[in-house]
Length: 207
Image (cartoon, rainbow, N blue to C red; front, side):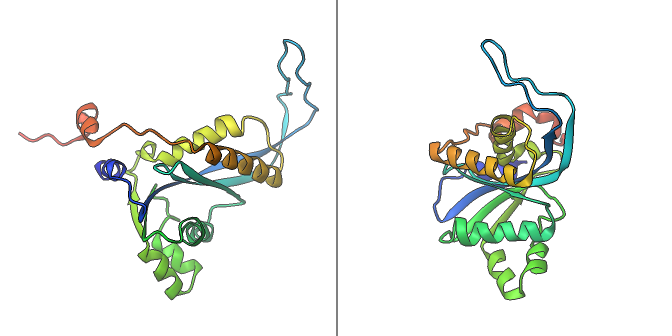
């Protein structure tokens, strides 16, 4: 936990970009009946019955000190999907950064081995050399700032039913552009000193 908090408290360095990464699964939900549109003094009405059209995954990358994020929809979240997202992060999003300080949870696909499974050894090695990975502790995914971005997306950008993968991509892309345009930043205030006081029970006791 303190490792993550120390990473967050470090001074901004444009050559070492802090990026938080997370994934959120979503169902593709269609309507069985046409919703009743809103009227004067009445909200739009949806039938409780729906059709399930499959699932998808949203990869979320957030650079909190820059007020930047990239949310991208994929059909699944295999090791190859994760590796492809990391390649895009390094070569498209931040090609001039010397190092990406990457915070994420310890999912079995989130490993350097996934890069070697997806790319030739020389290419995978280049990507590995540009990553400084910090894993959130078990049961400590709340420390990942990307989860805050996911909550904003799900609760505000995706507050209605989305029936198809294509529509989901459209909705997420529109949210992404709008939020980046306003350059919203996450004001993270929880520090290592706070943790040693408020989460004292998690620390070992010494007589």
